[in-house]
Image (cartoon, rainbow, N blue to C red; front, top):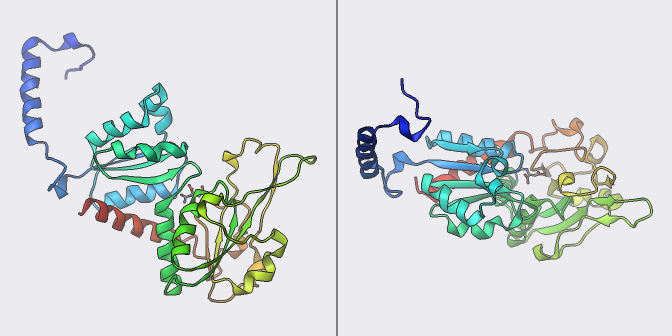
Length: 304
Ligand code: NCD
């Protein structure tokens, strides 16, 4: 057995031998095109993830596409050494045919154009989460038959929650009537509360107060719940929050055909007591659709 620990471990002859091998690898190494059986992918995650990363990786293994995975990419890649997103994409795209990327800096998406292979946004800070929107929309269609003209109520942290930012655009495209109920952040007793509203760049939708929600529930077709993005709020440890909570009492006000969605993870906004209600799609159907959606998306982008 031979180690390679310093350059002198190889003689000049051995180096020549290795160069011959490199020439052969280079010649045989398939180009990115027309080699369906030799695709590979990178999942580059710099924020925590359970569903998104694992469903992408399961989707890739289902498609028999090997994956190079990093769950702590900002700490373990050269981003930590000050490398730019531009150079990171240039590099990653030399090793793979697809990059699935999540990072807390919203602006990374602007550098995806430097990749030579498709890049999927698995979350850019508080910006967007387009694959979640796709699976949410697919779930709505499979639960309700169609998406058009539905009454939607979106509750939670609309300011910092990226899933809503992507979803709201496609709901609007489908002529849904959208109502919002933002969480409230109390920074300090002496300061006025802050409403975690949807940023205006995502559109203007009527907003209702937490104590008014119950008056609207009977007309809602889609209830989309989200958690407060506490890790994105500096004052998290000292602040307190108020938000609409779905529990055994409030769920009774919803119609039988309503669908309840949550991108998860859930905190206190949905009580576990409603998990088994047939309208609750978040734990099984929505998650499973996430896998199917990502398989189909990869097939579509890689034409495989
Ligand atoms: C969401 C995310 O990461 O934006 N989770 C997910 O991908 N399913 C929602 C969240 O973190 O609140």
